[in-house]
Structures are given as structure tokens and as C-alpha cells.
Image 1 (cartoon, rainbow, N blue to C red):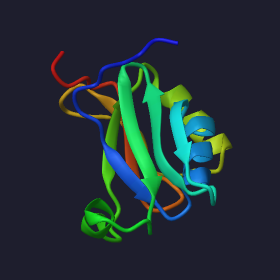
Image 2: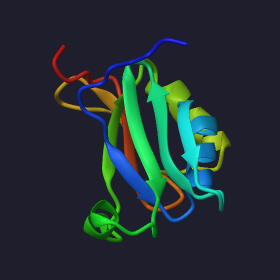
Image 3: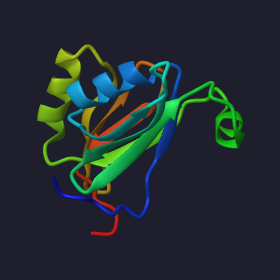
Length: 131
């Protein structure tokens, strides 16, 4: 296993973090890194990797400043992928809601948008910030 040192890590909270982990790995191709659970099975902290990127997530309702600050709104996350057309098919086969089919953008990217089971919007495309 390669350890990735990401400088920016989106962090999301889910009402059902276990289901989110399953959807993100099966539908979107993330790999499980670390998953820490409480005695009740609640996800305290998880790290999922995609290439050299990392998203961190946990369960809503644990209390604390971060939990309160996140509120109930969805978040948006962008992930660079090599082939958005193949990627969207994997997501579609897993039953993910596709918000926008793969589309060529004026700035050179090809991307699509999907919504996860708790309303977060994920964009997967060929644009690679900083490259």
C-alpha cells in the first residue's frame, strides 16, 4: 500500500457513513484507506483514496464543533479521472443518480456530475487543476 500525503482533503459527514463508504468504493472506484469505528459501529473517521487524492469522511451526529458547523447542506467535490465516459457507466450500473451526462466543457475538460445517496454532488472529469 502506498501512503499518499495529500495537501487538500475534502471532508464530508454522512448520516449513514457505512453506506457512503460502500457507494463511494463500488460506484465511484475509491479505495478504502483507514476506517475507524466506535463501539456502536459509527464511523468516527475514514479515508478513501482515488489516485493521489484523499477524501475524509465520518458520521453525522457525533457532536463537536465540526459536526455542528457542517449543518445539513450538501457539499461538492471534484475528482480528476482519465475516462469520464467509462467512469459514469460504473456509477450508473451501481444505481447512482447522474445529474449531467459526460459533456465537453469550453475550458477543455470532459466531465459529468452525480449525486451520492445523501445529496453531495460529485463531478468527475479530465480537468486537472495545476497541470
